[in-house]
Image 1 (cartoon, one colour):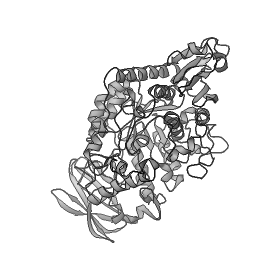
Image 2: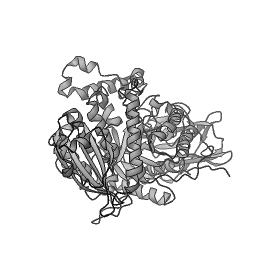
Image 3: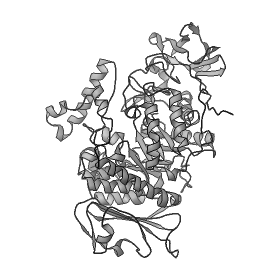
Image 4: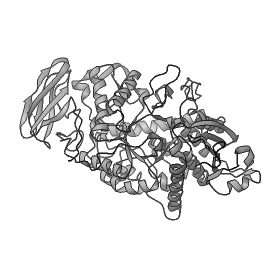
Length: 616
């Protein structure tokens, strides 16, 4: 029996039976609505209560259509379906009637993997050749030790090249990446290789180009608030609440994604919606699958985190598994590069102590005033498990929001970078690599767009240069002029990572594979229930940390990102009797026996469980 999955959306174009489709749209700002099906003309839709319009009619998958709105504010407007499952081209083109059950799944019994086994690999679909190109890379990523790929947003955006955060049709995979069936084939293939697939979703704003909601559904937005990126979405309205809730369930159920990463949720005006969304997803999915939910939240909202672990002190229900830990990134970036501008200024004082706090407690800022913002930031996080934090050295934001998109491979000492990467991959927090990081790519990752409106193109280009003009290093106008034009095709092409010549890239790949093999065998199986024992600075750029794993053994990591040698002894750092060496960057254990810890080095030990001899 063939396996097909679909999610019955209460809006959009829904195939109800062979040869029939129900069209439904919320347009409270329109007097009337018609659906214009290519080849058939305009068919009036029936008005329903609360601003809804609907029509069920004879129609086959593959048909293209638009809605024709008689808007109160602008008169007639022809626009794509806001809940389009696919586009016949770009966001300005007709929508496609998609048969959600057309794809036959090869691995329908896939149930996902426990969160503790997660090793994330963030990628930009366009830079990896679209859905088909990513699919071709899956086997080598699985062999490397990656257990989950994370796609930057795929929702339809204007043009062919975009980061994805300018999306305007949240239910439609961008046609430049491939078809809905190709995206499903990518996910299905990953499942066959034992890999999870996560999707980055944007629920805090719509892009500026190709969004017509303001004309026929102005109630979608608040008039009294703005985000950094445009109008604030009004989650107080049940129709808006349901639009995005359905979107999350659609990706998880119809496409079988294993998890979602919710972008910049601190910009969502109704924090309670986040909890409602998480609870609804947990209820719908139940215990039948491992589905994981990860936040990006500038407020370090610890009360939302740690799904699967009991809440304490009457705190909320912990429906989210983890948060991207920008604190850990920022302090590691400061330690590796010495940069102190912008938000890095909040991490320059005693950075090793701040890194130790991340390793032991999660966040650096847990309610303290940030020197960058001058405001209190964060919530206490010491009671959360290490796996409530996704740690990384690089991601799309932290590379691409630099003027020239430099990676750490061109900013940091290579040996220090290798040790920092080993720390990320061996520590109990969930690790994430950014595409190309596995082979030490040196290509930049730049901010790129492909808007067709010249006024918008100019505004984006000039706005980006204005943003960097505030920094002292860009005082020279000539340097500002060298910032790549986001709308240039060359900017996109130069952001595609490629392995460098041997032996450098090959050595990097071997090192990452070794580290992930160690994680798979000796760390990941014992992370549920793991807890931090201690973490402390032992030098200006050096930290020592220990965690008790669920089998009773102790993971012991010492890292020195400075070039200077430290005076340390093995007895000061570890209970060495019966300990196993998991990873030594080169001579660290031998040097410790002589009372020194080398520069640019890392040593990971496994101390046995008390009274158990060597750990299993």
